[in-house]
Length: 432
Image 1 (cartoon, rainbow, N blue to C red):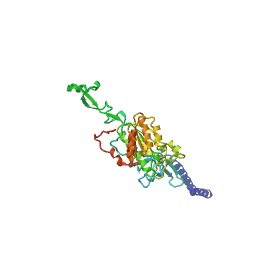
Image 2: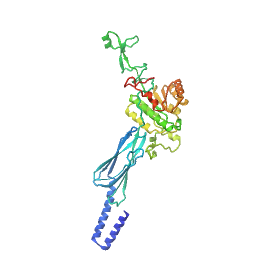
Image 3: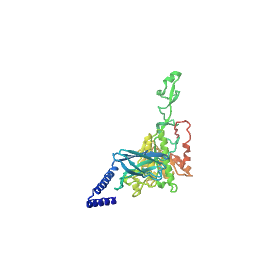
Image 4: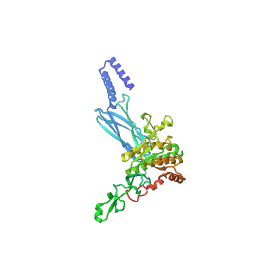
């Protein structure tokens, strides 16, 4: 570019000295080409529209296709355009996402690439770097940026067919064997009238047909309104297996929540882990290799506590499940508040009789005492310990004496009791 300017100055000097029309003509052409290149290059990216289209949520193992659309809104063409999408190496399936092209006036072009959801998390795709210049290379190339997009990869979900969680609530949509309550929306048949039966339960049509008083029978049902307490206080887990155990705890929470919501039950989630997305946008840090959102506290543990995941109140429905899975995808273990200190605060606003599933490392005395206090408060706690424990029989017996159930689920094999086929197909049975 500097050489071209010196050439124009030289032509200008020669033109004034020699007074030759042909030299003036060359000078006019050179100045015109330079002015046109400068003007068109400034407008090229200004009239260029870039868009990124993709599914912003994916399950573990899925392949996500990302489509880039480039549209030249001007009538003038773009001589050359270079694009480069920044993709973490652990996500991308293609060796390069860099391309060079040219766009005519009002022309659009699309490109696509694929990323693989290999690990749960909140990932950044992009930014898209754009560079454009003139055809002769007379002016400096202009650069533009399409802001990054974000991809949420849900944790692994293990399909369950039955779940041994009891409930104290009388009404619901899951059939049960506890004959303390009956659901009037679940008629089962008729039986002979007995002393003490209400006259409103008599089936008068069937009684007239059989000439004998018959009473309607109703199927018992329970409601399994559940709050999942996911303990991600890192000090509670053994250092050697901390990463595996905390990831398995998240998988267990996701599997339990998915099963219960698929059974049309209300489920909530609370965790003392950290949600990195709660940091201010300027303070968010993404790993250069994985592209995953990290949590980088600037100060002490007390500051980490304010970024703990916000509790999600129990609700039912598929959209609510997606909300729970999104939080589980982002959670990070940290030294926050231990479960025995944190659980009373987070359960204070829950309704009476709700089932509280506490997923933690081990069933130590402090944890069992905390769940015992929940039992005395009218809740129905269940302990799920995710670290292997050869002496878990003692924990189970201690939990029984304190009034709640305890399970040791340290790997997928331990979930086999919840993956057996049901006696009645299509009905999720909950036993006490």
